[in-house]
Image (cartoon, rainbow, N blue to C red; front, side, top):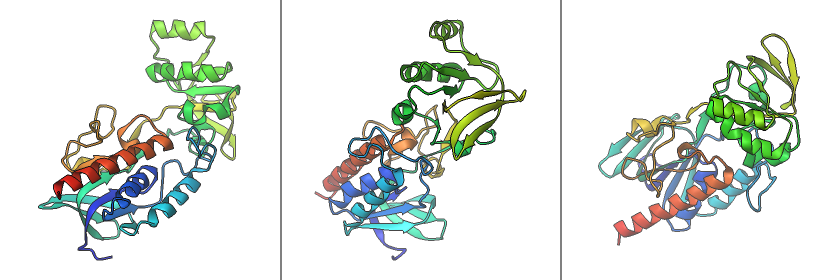
Length: 302
């Protein structure tokens, strides 16, 4: 592939959202380059759920089929690499990669996702996406009626509590330190018989990623079969920000209703710009971004 080749669109990130955008654009005969390093954030998750026609399918299988289908469109090219920097040019953008490749495009899509920042709790990362989960819609049915924890505090824990309570009556909140609930929240939790444990967590004992016990700093243990957890995150790529794209207060890339960022001709889709974190939503947003960009390119050349 020539380094000087100019593409209509470069897509940074070739997971669900990036592939979805590429399919839409490939079907519209656009010259597309997907730059992807093959490390999706849900690579440890055994099954994808709440996705019509794909419920219960391993995420890597969905991605593999998606890539095979997108590869059928001859104007879509793939490169196994990681986009590291980008600059604005007269006719669009120039992207440099970790393998010292240079590519140019009129428009960019960042489908780069986010990176979860794991707490310093032994065993936590081994369970993440398996039995320590982020979303009651993606995983809640599978852990229904089980002894379940919520590793979170304050407003975040209170947000999760009603949805988790809907799926199990055996629920405990683990604040990993002093609780920060307001009096109204505490009253509501007490009314719903949801205990709070304020001890610091030092370990999650597990069997191949499936929670057995939560171990506290005082060496006491509490048996659980699964937990929800709300984690801080950072953007998987800092390139959107270095190109001038604004992040919102939550740390997501700021986009409008058409998934346009604050920089002209740069778009974002998938987990990097929304709290709705699911394979189904990533695919949906990528599909829309592809259609919007094709419409813009069509109008520009009409």
